Length: 294
Image 1 (cartoon, helix red, strand yellow):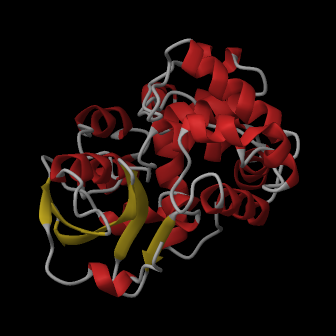
Image 2 (image 1 turned 180 degrees about the horizontal axis):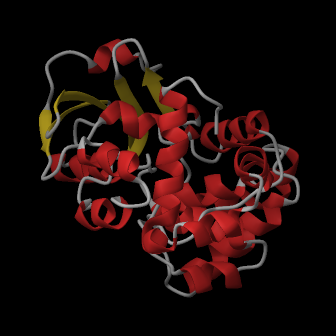
């Protein structure tokens, strides 16, 4: 596949993604670290976000840039035969274009007033992959490891089984546990990826394209998927009721508030249905103000 340059996606847009609610592309990219994992490209200087896509037999690139709060400009390269509607659907999933923020604003208004205001101006959307399956596997690759290792493992999956795009479920099954361990260096995550992929396909929870919407109980029933991974996957499916708690999150609460995540949740019980979103936006505001990363 020819090397893609973001400048190629910055000419005249091919289509417009028109939004019912304001969406801030920069705040969405900053919402967490997904934009720095393959196959994403983020041009910070020009505020252009691109992602490699496989549509049919073709692999190419789709790029987004902002025109105004309710319009994103969409360009693509290498996907000349792809239906425009499919491209817009995938780009819309990245920014949760169909998510109505009204309930979140109402739920957070008292306990998280500044976070509610951030949502009203186009924040509150956590960058998502083109399918649930992409988000699911990337979440597994964050378990008990460093961010640099997550980046390395994700790049390995895109390079070989994915052939330039994020691999489909059947591509990873065909690649197999041995190569996931030996070539992609997934370690103990390799059998988890294989077993959970096979079970979700067998149960009809995801389709061959990786689309799906499994609930929290189903996710925690999968071997190797604990409360953190399940909560993170559900967070990206707009279930904001559980904070994905890992050691970094626990340390943050101890250092900042002198107590754990449970006490934080209890102190903001009125926002329970959107607690995780309030927390993530609180951390985003700190980053915008030059505070601690996370």
